[in-house]
Image (spheres, rainbow, N blue to C red):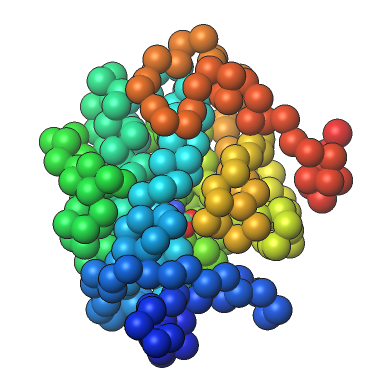
Length: 286
Ligand code: SAM
């Protein structure tokens, strides 16, 4: 990865460019490059930015920032955990910034949180430099497994999961397999008969084809598929989707929500499944 392509000095200033699409890029002014290394899987940057605070960037794509990362991490965890009435075993795939695991750890009834992240270095630097996101996670129920998520769900285990959270990076590099039907079928096989999974399903503005394909592939595997949305300012186009594949439960229970959060609340759990007309049209649903 050619770091100079997206990180450059202009006089005394440092600017980071995120290349969104062929004809669109966004520049962030940076106070300091805190960490920059290439792991066996990707180039990892921790940048301290003026407007979004410290941020994690993998192969040039912003993954999370201290200013808005909680929106994504709360939405990808509390919504599925509110739909399942009694989750005990949770699997997180990806999620190297530890923000999702930190939210899952807010549920005392959850006994086991397996987190399968391909890149140990992302966890290490997020714990060290992104404490506002990772909370320097040290809950004893979190069991870190450094492996490829697609390989992990193929292995035989003597237990199943209630909820699986796929907190992956975009479908490039090591994450490509996490968007394939075969992977979704493996998730299905790793879930109890009333289990459910959730994944981040990209932007309906910039990547509608990917969003629709995730929805279609999950429909081929799960009897219930539901999409919900949130706005995450540093993700491409801001407007972001999440998709649930479930074997049994699909109704949220907002009244039961009692966690301390910065974004998610009872009203948001209730309303996040209301999709705009253009998204319904893209998905071909009513
Ligand atoms: N919230 C973020 C977003 O949507 O941009 C994703 C955050 S999290 C940092 C994504 C993580 O997925 C990264 O740490 C990356 O290393 C991990 N990852 C990518 N491919 C993976 C795979 N095949 N198995 C497990 N983890 C993977």
